[in-house]
Length: 107
Image (tube, rainbow, N blue to C red; front, top):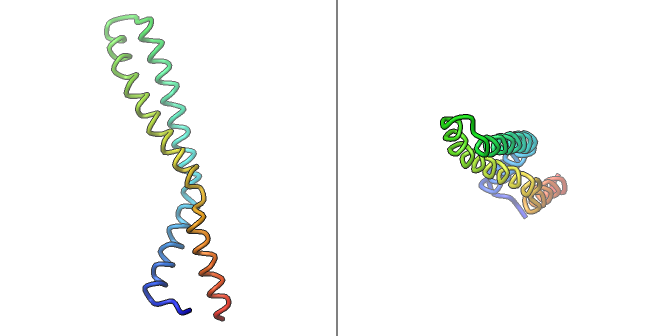
C-alpha cells in the first residue's frame, strides 16, 4: 500500500495535533482543576456571606456572585473532565502506530 501526498499531509497533521495535545493536556487539566477549586471556594464563601450578610450591599454581591461562580465552576469542571476523557484517543494512536510501522516496513 502506498500513501498518496494527501495521506501524508493528513498523517502529518494528525501527528502534529497529537504532539500538541500531549504537551497541552497537563496544562489544561491543572488550570481547569485549579480554577474549578477556586470557584468552588468562592461559591461557598458567597453562600455563607448571603446567609449572614453584614449589609445590603454584601447581600447583593453574594446573591449575584454565587450563581456566576457556580456556573464558572461547572464549566471548568466539564473542561477538566474533557481533558481526562480525551487523555488518550485510541483510534488516533492506532492510526499513528500503523503509519509508523508501515513506514518502517517500507524502508
